[in-house]
Each structure stands twice: as structure tokens, then as C-alpha cells.
Length: 145
Picture 1 (cartoon, rainbow, N blue to C red):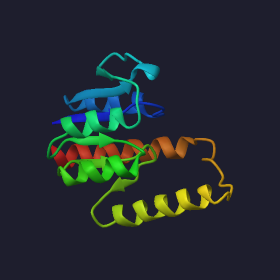
Picture 2 (spheres, one colour; picture 1 turned 60 degrees about the vertical axis):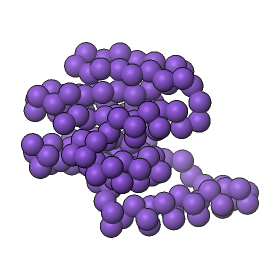
Picture 3 (cartoon, one colour; picture 1 turned 90 degrees about the vertical axis):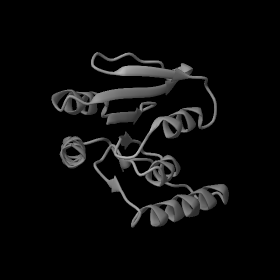
Picture 4 (cartoon, rainbow, N blue to C red; picture 1 turned 180 degrees about the horizontal axis):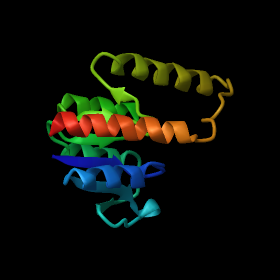
């Protein structure tokens, strides 16, 4: 089992590496050349810069029972199709039961933005979000092991 992290702009890399290390699970960061990073306790895979290049690299690596961390609903859906466990940086675990609604929400928001409707960006990250992520990842690791 491996924890794969869509690392471009991911605020919980350290938390994920710590949890994976505690459980003796490999952790792999995937980023593009514009966001290159190295972290102790994790392998880094750098892919060419380009639309969805990290997403395609991650989905080609992830296998059943692996864990993927991403905020991208499209990537989450592809990882679920490969029978991986998937969660976002706020601790939301993506499932077959919730992914269709999330994809529809993303599509609707994109259409509104294209029509000129202004949408708010994410609120400032809170400690509670970090705690929710850590709890959800811990639960997925225990279930997978």
C-alpha cells in the first residue's frame, strides 16, 4: 500500500507523510516542474508541467487499496474507479456515493463562472481542517492495513 499525494498546492503534505511513516507505509508526492518539492520521508515524482499531467501520472500509479490525497474531484473519481481510497485536504473521504454529486457541483460552478458569476475562493485554512484530515487519513490507514 502507498499514500499518493497530488502535491501541487496541497496544505497537508507534512501531516500525510507523518501518518504514513507511523504506519510504515510508503508516501509518494507527485508534482510538476513548476512546483518541485522534496520532503524527508517521501519519494517525489516530478512530471512535466501541463494541464492535468500530475493527475494522469497519479492515476496511472494508484492501485486498489492505495490512498490518494487530492482536492480534484475528477482525479478522485478516476482513483475510485481503480478501487483506491481517496480523501481531500479537509478530511472529506470521496466515495462512490458522493463523487457524482461533487462532480455535478464542480460542473455547475464552472458554468456559472463562465457566465460571469463571481464565486468566492476558499476560506483561510483552519486547525480544525488539519485535524479532520489527520483523523480521516488515520482511519483510512487503519482500515487499509
